[in-house]
Length: 294
Image (cartoon, rainbow, N blue to C red; front, side, top):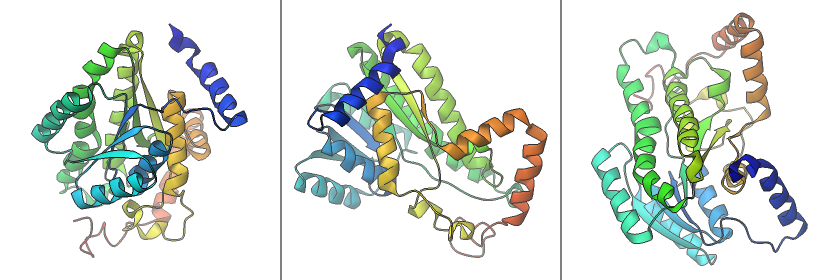
């Protein structure tokens, strides 16, 4: 029942660490697994977590990039281990879970960060059902399979925390992102229910609903070229807050306002977003005019 006081206790702990900078983070000595750790948000989060004294387990497809991140963390006095993995390969995920439990015992914290986005209108998607299948594979089925593999050990040790990197699109319901937002919304709901079922085992979940972040993921979208985007380092700071404080969600201002707008004036919000969608057409990549997003 101590989880009922988790939010105020976390706030007091954060205040204490702010007033006394030498106070150790709750991550000190913990094992933290981060997927998608070879670049962008995952890489920045790996450095931030390692700086707080955790042993970081780095997971991503690109083994050479994982080795680079590991070496950089080690050069700064941190501790990291690399595990190359394609999350869409179910058997490989199961094998990794077995290896992790053998080498480290229970993983204390899991950050489901790996993902892929596609911005494409439904008009251009009638014959592209594979877009929905592949985004569910990497954004939902992969992280759920990994979480389910690690969850029993978390529950047995009576501690664990999962951070799902989802999207403000879950709140906004942004046009042209049906495949991406549907997959991330599924992960969001899964995490919420997991936290309720594992409540009495002190295993929790935070859904971090990130906004536009300056990573390679937004590169193919022309409409984002002149838009201000959050840096991966700033986003990593919010993810660390999710790890240390274990809130239910970490939201941004725009996403929260949009969520209220959708609830209070659903038809008006439909009109507003439909008009915005009309003014922001599909990118060349989405139209198949480049080699990206095919």
